[in-house]
Image 1 (tube, rainbow, N blue to C red):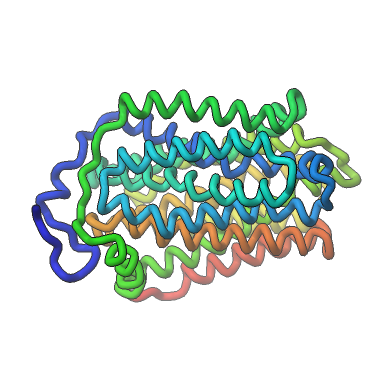
Image 2: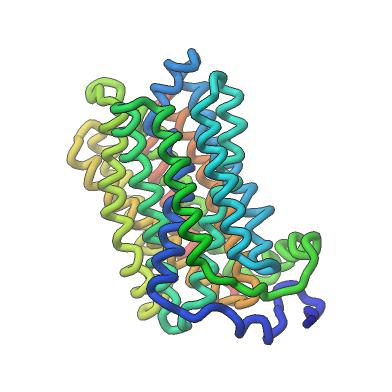
Length: 403
């Protein structure tokens, strides 16, 4: 067995050459795995009013459910995603698929809010397999096209995020929210069988023990200023994203709109159109460099939420702005991934863990602040909050960075 040199993040060169061969079919499989798993995080958002009525709690209390899901996801990425550098990613992905399917089925049997919150954490932790798929794609991609390949897998992930709201809203209105979670658990079980048959082995790139692997996260954070800058910028962009999506259903249910959960879910279609631009953003990062893409992304977020603040009850502006700011946030994420995957080829799972953990901390903060601001300052106040997040992200990218 080969052994690592002392600095964490520098893998044995012999191991890095044994990754599976690149193929479009494998990229598609990874994109599906990422999308179906991460969708589980968002099934609860369009149906919060249903959950509040069913469990007999207030909208403010049920608003903790998306926050617990996102906290679980952040914990799963921070504590489990790094092991993708140490162990076979095939085994990790399959194990998480099994746990996630069981957790989704268990949600359908809950009758108390605390049970739902506890299972939401389990769903979040196991859904972190989405972030095992992205570094797997980066590992097999030719260097000159890494942005495009990662963008393709991210398209699957982002479509999962956005279409999950459509599916959940419409399905729950039709058959009830419990049937929605049963169907999601069964679908994930079927996909798990396909993944078990088709997913190749991904040899590890390091022999670090788990404690050393987790400890190396701090070393990587200190070592790479570009990583810190990317993580902080994406955290603010994601806070704007989450502040919007975690409160949209509540806002649309109030005057002057008065819409149900299915309409809130259909807004995911507008976001999905933005997500389809993800491969284009990756290709642009390959050609023009990621910095331009990130600055444009922050600009789209600022303009969209600024428009929401100026015309808070204009439905067409709301739909168009949803498309634009979703495109901005997702393009920024792909550009940031392009930056960090070039820092250390043997530590891509750990670099992913740090970036996405920061991103989901931002999302959790955005969800928590969004609920408070919507209740106290209305939709215009929430829009200004999200636009402010975008301004901070743009300033972080405009400041001169260390090389």
